[in-house]
Length: 214
Length: 137
Image (cartoon, rainbow over all chains, first blue to last red; front, side, top):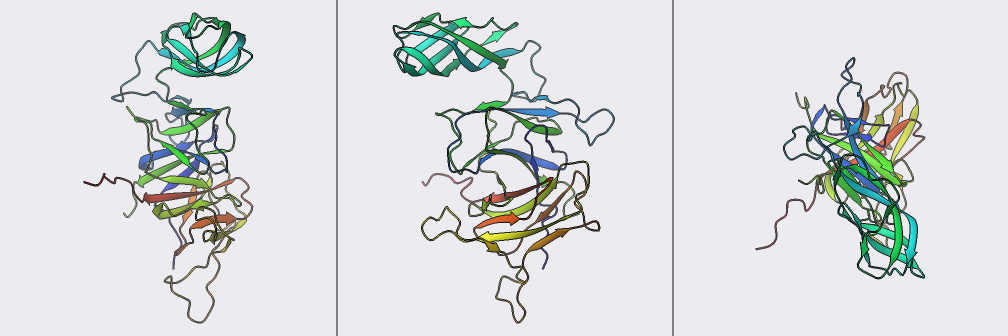
């Protein structure tokens, strides 16, 4: 009785700087596994790829975020950016939970928590869109759906085409569950760059292996 | 454009005390992944299994070493051996390579006991149940 499962799947820890080589298979999935007993509600995960290095086909070259693309063609020459994080610089006054704060460039934040009218927490309601240089931080509110004034925020801009996911209280990875991703048109090597999250297992599975059963 | 791969596979870190739940799929493999540039030439690992606890079908009961059964039937005569995997200089996990195992007749929950060192000990569950199902007409 053999217990070998050679040739069925490959599995990797792909938490950067570790990586997976997708070349041996025809399909893959990146898995964010929450094996804890609590929801994971924070963290931004960018899926990065690299071609083989010039000198060694088994070693990755420089990693960069994988780009979302409809047809696997190169990304547009002018990158479009969106906000993927907003930190409170000044909480302002007169705000209430649920107010929508516009910052310009299509960026809208939702007030998540307040203390006596001062904003203590926000979520990104609309990530906005820009091209070219990032606006200087802090960015002042342009308007609000409520009476609040005076809030400012430090925004983090990323390429809109970057393949990434951001967890939040509204979009968590629930306790004991997983999130699986397969960015189209990946590179030979992939990995996941994690910001702000712990306790997640960042794994890659390569399936439909070539040369099995030969 | 979606990048979801939901319903294709499940993957777990199964270095004890972490574990995998095999119930969602029909196939599985335990993978010892050496993602370093050096061979792993030492290590003894025992594949352990557990049924669900009496009170919660999603929580494992007590883990014990899996037995390697010849045909999933009770062994005749000699006791079935534990599912123990040993790496040594003659049988290493080579640099940047992997070893995959699937002990027959596992329990619902499995994990791997032993000192992982630089190995990543992972479990992949495949052929997931309830994928591709259509709504009832």
